[in-house]
Image 1 (cartoon, rainbow over the protein chains, first blue to last red):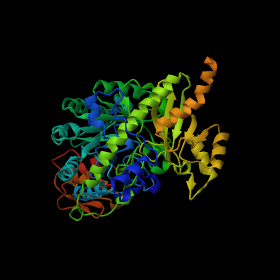
Image 2 (image 1 turned 180 degrees about the horizontal axis):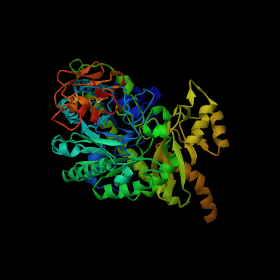
Image 3 (image 1 turned 90 degrees about the vertical axis):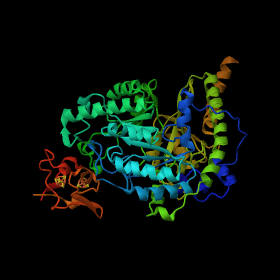
Image 4 (image 1 turned 90 degrees about the horizontal axis):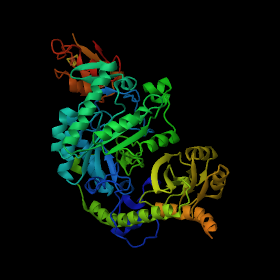
Length: 492
Length: 64
Ligand code: SF4
Ligand code: SF4
């Protein structure tokens, strides 16, 4: 997975210079313009709280990494899209992890990662299981880690059923981000998603179960809001069950103060052995997902860069270095060394200033063209905000929309790696083309003639002309070249 | 009068250990086992055995 790691040299970065080079992914680097506005329409206090959080800030996910540790495996509800027995190393889905750690083992792993990955900024506990239900282990882990790395951000995910019982402890621990998974605000819909819950010493089923879960989820939202803890809501989009209903969910959670609402597609396969997998319930297509997200655009800010990382994922969103650190580390044998993270932060502060300025300029350029065309642009990137990945090495493409509104990130498309060892497999290229449905152009650092021709035949343009540019700048340049001449001809 | 865990089905999630009112359940390797001397089947404490009520895998916490 080495080519997925944006900062190629980060295995053992030796100097600030190496990091800086790795970060730009090429050579070109102009001077920073110093603007710090990346917040879009978020209030400044909120931007300040989330700006280094890769799961919440689309801008930050280019630079900062989160790590999840699986320390809380016990769960208090059953979801139809989850099978607790299933644990496969080839799978990247929430709730699926390959190791369970004790709080002490988790501390060892966190220190090892913090020493190796200077982008590390967020520690999350997201399952499998429910971090608020298995609260003793969640709490113990957070306490151990904050003692050693005081500046780490802590966050947890929960279904909300047990959360009201611990909300004061959560507030007391300075956990300022909580993710709630809320798939419905109507218990009737809930009955199709949750076969049972365990609450107050009893297993509840049917409408009773869904009602209790719904009430506790709403209570969780209110209690967290009252304590000024940021809440993100995750919803799994299940076609035919809650897809239309998620519009209602969006209204309700926004009304209760959630600052982000993230719609995730159901991932369903009979081989997973989940209820939905076995009943043939399908997940949404990329375009269905986008259509729903577009309809919610004016609601709570949507998080489109979420990649449904594994619960024990390590790294920048989208890459998964968890396997590299599956060592049996004992905390007394690893010593935390904060120096690399500090150096990295200084460099990133400068790079981000430039990136933010470039993004603004690019959006202004595109909307200024008044070309009217709205196109989807897919970008191959290893991170750092630049077009810096070979087409054949991309395991996913970042998709941006260039339109009269400017350049906006709208999501990512995962693909199977097309190039293994330098030459492509046609079968996989077909998969890539399918994944790029609706996309007009692919921007990458390099692309061979053969895949380029195949893409052209499929009606998708591909170019490496903007290699190593900032993503938004490359998109703006491509867009201008494509649409400006026509415009000028008209006015000439 | 005791419950037992079908070892081959246990995911090791620890929910039963968490809920058992009598500390009758402990980890053994990757899975969990019930100490029949401590298990009361939750008689007089709950309407139903807590381990069976919380376990995510059907028919895994069963009467011994
Ligand atoms: S039946 Fe009750 S007492 Fe026995 S192991 Fe299960 S939870 Fe514990
Ligand atoms: S609740 Fe069930 S699956 Fe979980 S540890 Fe106990 S017996 Fe195993």
